[in-house]
Image (cartoon, rainbow, N blue to C red; front, side, top):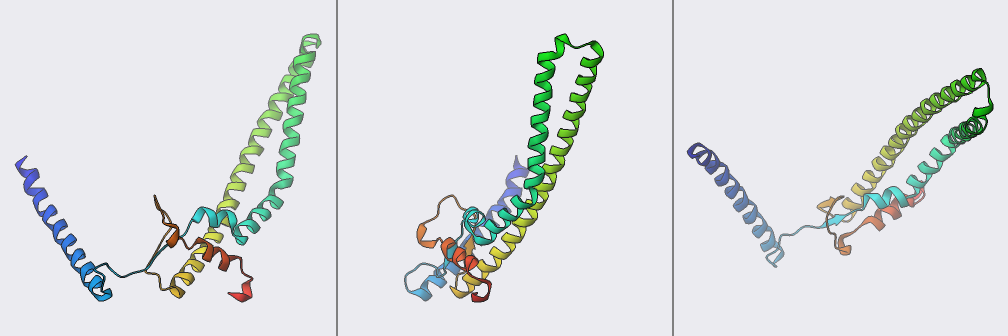
Length: 185
């Protein structure tokens, strides 16, 4: 126990020292503004809104839908064929010969296995493309956030917070710049 307290004491003292330095810096900055509060401008952006509402995000979503719609339709058709074969086997299975029933069951198992493989490949491909598209949108959004921050003289912009006062939310400004035609930025 003595080791623990002797080990923690320097860490606690260092933390208190750092806190006093920060408080002194904040007071010095506050003195410069005349109100006792540190100067600085903060903002917040709602990344989720940007990924849902911005023109680049909507365009990326439409491109993904166009790119993957044919494969999705093929998977839906394949699922319908599997369901129909399964229902036929359930209905006609008792009156089929053992060979016919065995062949139908094998065909159903093969189709099911092929369907699951294609569905897994589809999901992996879609997720990879979605992640790449979202990364491109986020990269563009981050550049716009930096541009808005520099133009508005912001000291810090947050993307995650438990609570945000709407007064510091600059998401609409970022969306406006993101949605503007390329030549007007």
